[in-house]
Image (cartoon, rainbow, N blue to C red):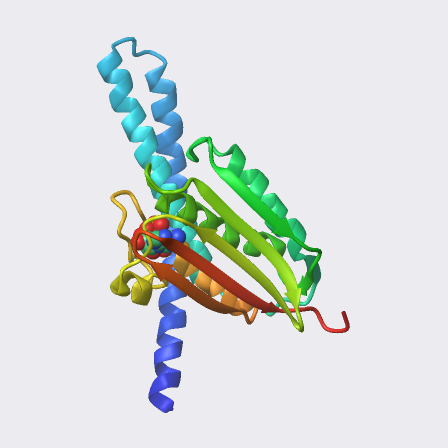
Length: 229
Ligand code: ADP
């Protein structure tokens, strides 16, 4: 037990250090990005423009990585405000449909009931968004282009299901998907689901995964409902 406590303290210290470093990295990145944008106004050569765009894109990628890492390393609080999980899910669906990196032409099946829980809206939005983006990215050209999102109340739980008909997961990915930096994507960070897991844990959620190769994946998330409802 003592070893466990020491281990936890060590991890917390590393987390704090990492969060500090991440903050420090963001400022110079903003400086680099701003300067590049100014400089690139003077370039008329398409090759130079292209190179500048690559630099800007890669800076964006570093920013995403740092943001996700910070979310992961941040200290936890216990949620005590009542929020509408329905609103959270609706916001995510609206957001995801508008994103330029999400292909058009998806069929969205959205069946959601009104459910409130104790929680953090913004964190939950991030958690759900990560799952929905993964769902979209798992769908290849010859898969059914349909994402199904359902939310209902079941006894003392809010039950959220996000289902795709994409590539599914191997046993190994199923085992490791919540680990930071585990990714099967060329441009993945492997942090999305680690962050999601952390946020859901904070809300005392239970996560079930149904997945089959080339059939698709369903995330079922059960969150205890606000007391007295
Ligand atoms: P990233 O998306 O950057 O790879 P994540 O932590 O969000 O990182 O996901 C980790 C891995 O889990 C993904 O690379 C992918 O292999 C797998 N995964 C997550 N969601 C799905 C899904 N809906 N269908 C198939 N694989 C998935």
